[in-house]
Image (cartoon, rainbow, N blue to C red; front, side):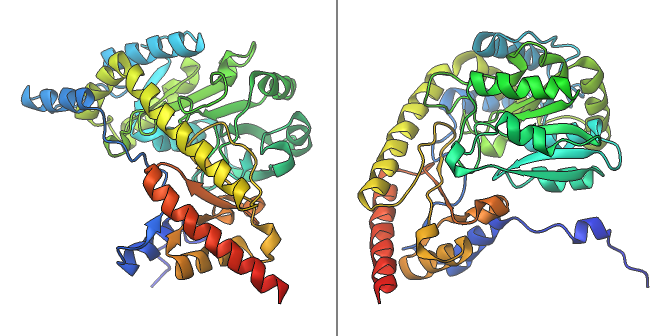
Length: 393
């Protein structure tokens, strides 16, 4: 019997995030604290849930158009105009997807031909590299550096470009580091992108969770709108992870092809979720502001806790992750995370789950209550103290 499996799929590595999540699930220990999953601990705001319920009560269980409810696409355009000063045509430049993850997948499939190179700054979200491979592209990794606060510099971008480069994935605000790109950073890399005639897939799912000024989209930089696919969604900002809803905005010629793939593979995003999302965009700004205040409080607490225990960590200004450095202990990120879970019953994700350049770091999510974070930091302080004592022997 011939091998039934596609080799490129077999060779894909499973997610390092899920590895530790599965270990915690198997431990079945109520004393274990998991800081590994990037999911808001808030419930979806009631007025959004209520709109979803109302849509079901009204029997709105039909397919929508392939590109999504017209009203939702119009609200997405109003939102991006209000927040970023961006103008998109709801009829031809917006596609509603099953989470931001689908938009990443079909965006790459619409952009690349076999052998095209896709630049992926790492550490970053685990799906970019597999999606590039499945699209037939060659992923080229740009290792971001702690001394640059894990931002992408124009020099790093320039050094990675070849004649085969076509797409840059721009993952900011960043998961796992919490790094952001400010307007001056974006202008510098935009010059390189335009000079080399590249396209950008900008994953801005954490755009509302920024703690230094406001988020700036690279699509708002002069010359970049026509070569950028802006990806966003509702999971992080509105605590709507299980609703599975995202969107992509960009040039009509690209969105037309993305919609074609979406049409054949998905048909349309969940109708109930789409109706709820209309209300989220219309009436959810206050909810976002309240959650952002809470996340920022947790962020500042963790940074202070790291300082007090002498653990190095640059200050992240986006998302809901911190990325402390554990290089001083002379062990791999995987070893550190494994011992931390085994000995202190706290689950965090090794930095290497997000690329080789994450070695020596640990991702800790603060999408958890302050009370839980305080208990976890007490355990981390005890663990760090024990490791330092071991080094002295």
